[in-house]
Image 1: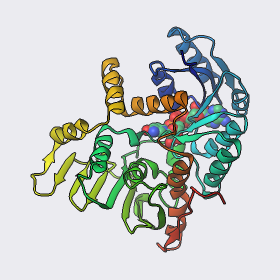
Image 2 (image 1 turned 120 degrees about the vertical axis):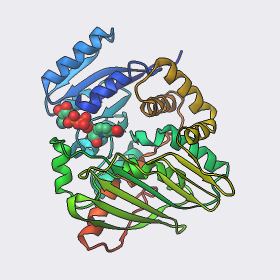
Image 3 (image 1 turned 180 degrees about the vertical axis):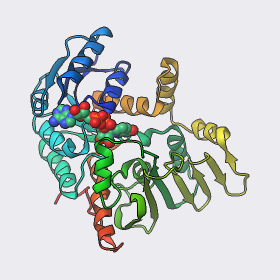
Image 4 (image 1 turned 60 degrees about the vertical axis):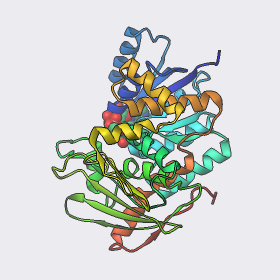
Length: 359
Ligand SMILES: NC(=O)c1ccc[n+]([C@@H]2O[C@H](COP(=O)([O-])OP(=O)(O)OC[C@H]3O[C@@H](n4cnc5c(N)ncnc54)[C@H](O)[C@@H]3O)[C@@H](O)[C@H]2O)c1
């Protein structure tokens, strides 16, 4: 039997606790250590794990105790669920301690941090990914397979977004967003699009222009080496309905996820809603289909998180490549700084580094 992947989890807030819950049912992995600033969060999590029969978990509290977690032999994978400011620092240290790393979104907040993630992964031979769960949206996964079969022709343009009315949120994220001059949270919209366009493989992002307006609404337009375009939006301050848009414009077809799942292929009637979702799902590959069947049997609350976790643990257990490489994590996250740079220059074009090449 393959040995289980031992997880060390840093950050036991909203997302960290959701991660604790999720990993109760992910095959091939178990939480071995937890860490948080607050001892009350650590104690509460320990009690929860204990009540579920998940015993023997080592616990650390305090600002620097995560460093001890990274040194544990029983930890193979460090999952980082803290606020954005500490992601890259923790991931770099964990890789230097010989651990693989999975970082919540965005993986880093500056171009320099993004470069350091790539350099450290290369230097240490460890693997680093970003937990961009929107890449595992079931509609997106089906559309991706349809695209691989050529059903949309050549993709010429995509649109993505993070539109989420968070006006009532008063946590660190709202303060960080208030200070940001561009798009501080680009990866939910951009990640799935980069996968569709095969970015960092057969095409790459080359430049962007960005504008921020009233209410911190940001629009960023990105261009690829092959001349394809991506429109990315960020809006957390208006009463717009939740949307990641997820539009694909191809030479033979069109698809969008929001506001209504839609598939339009040349010469055919547009298909919308549940029917469009069912068509996308009918194209899932075998591996994804198997995970979804199991996720539904277990009645997991969120299938895209379940698919993401299963794919990650399966890749680690079998030594397979990650779906989201360190170069992907770095590129998608770098848009936080690059969009702010362009917006500060009144929307002037800014070059996007190639994170598949070491500096
Ligand atoms: N993928 C998604 O859908 C999704 C959803 C929500 C949040 N997130 C991401 O998850 C991350 C965490 O967000 P959240 O909403 O859970 O925030 P949170 O504030 O609820 O939790 C962060 C936790 O990190 C802990 N922490 C901070 N510094 C630490 C340190 N030095 N050592 C140990 N613990 C430390 C805090 O005490 C807190 O418990 C962010 O990157 C966010 O963007 C992703």
